[in-house]
Length: 159
Image 1 (cartoon, rainbow, N blue to C red):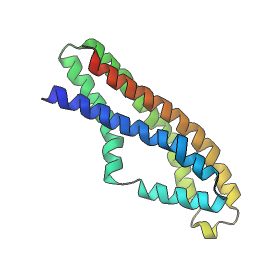
Image 2: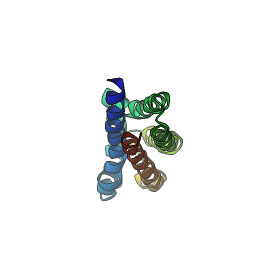
Image 3: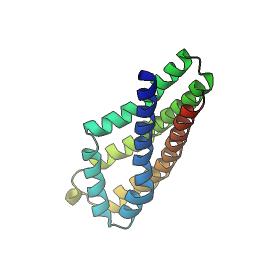
Image 4: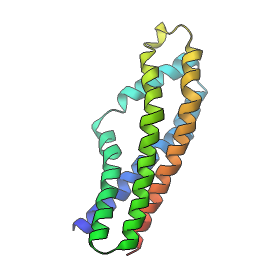
């Protein structure tokens, strides 16, 4: 039972993990790019607060934990190829987490420290320090998390 449920869980949460970043890359940030400085800052501050919820935590922690569990299960069952694919997926997820915590989260925090949007003297400066770098690195974490999804799915098919 565990050998069937854990890999499916890993694929689903890794897909949600990648999908979150993908949605920001193709819709959220391009949409906010069309908004004025104050609107963009206010919405991102709202997103930064709203995203910290149990559903996000399950996905953000569940993807690497699920893939790690798969790697251990596959290795213990002697499914070396599946364990290797899971290991590559885990490395990709770790890369996405590294980018998140070293680039995106510090920019989110700086945006929040700017304070309420109506009190920001020069919102263009605040936006300029945030947006281009955040978006560029989000594209990278989108790509590596999509690679993790592919690797997690491939691990299901090789034994």
